[in-house]
Image (cartoon, rainbow, N blue to C red):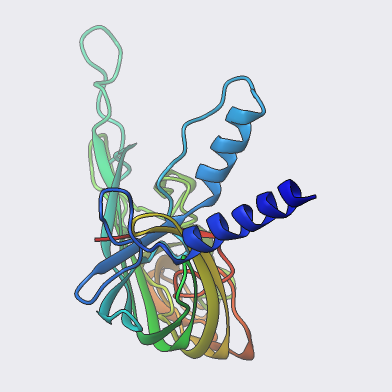
Length: 322
């Protein structure tokens, strides 16, 4: 009996000592200190890797360093002191892509046959599609911390904005032309919009009906410029969470948030060109039209998730402090 009591007492003593010991065997502090920085990544790949390793799963894949949010924002914090930290989230991205495709020259009639009876090869022209994209995500807040052991609780608030702008620009090797009457080979001829003007399966050739009155001619239109509606989001939230420091300044943790989110998508603007007439003219013409899309918006006062601009929302995270 005395031996059992002694073992229980020893167990409680060891547990208590471990819980209160906030330095490693090398004297390194376990918890973050004033002036420390911190970053966090998605912990799920690391936990899956460890679970598969102990479960002896075949072909266990090495863990990856993943963003905490679907919006791919970088999250971090700066500790003013052991009980308070400033939080920040950032994403600033600029991107672009260019697709070039060759198409047959439709601006002239077929060339005269050569000496061997075959016409000379048709000239080729280049169609180009340029896409640009800009993304900006910013958030900042204050985090208060609570706890005297490796298990730390935290809470606070933050505010953030997110914006995205996209644009398509098209140039075509075949310039539209109307009312031409070629009289022989290799002469300038009429050019209407055709499926050959498609570039990169981007949907830049559409029906002209409904865009141009009367339409006719090729009854198709092609896009010269497409501006997507600017996406803008604003949010303010409160959060609460906890993390456990399993190694000096390394922790697993997570949090939940609740707050206000407002998002809007501006009007898109698409510029088209086509050939045709309005039905009251004996000749065709080259027309240009700009069509505006609708404007949309949303509002929410609710719990948030990993689709928000903020990092750790409802995501189990692995944090590093230094």
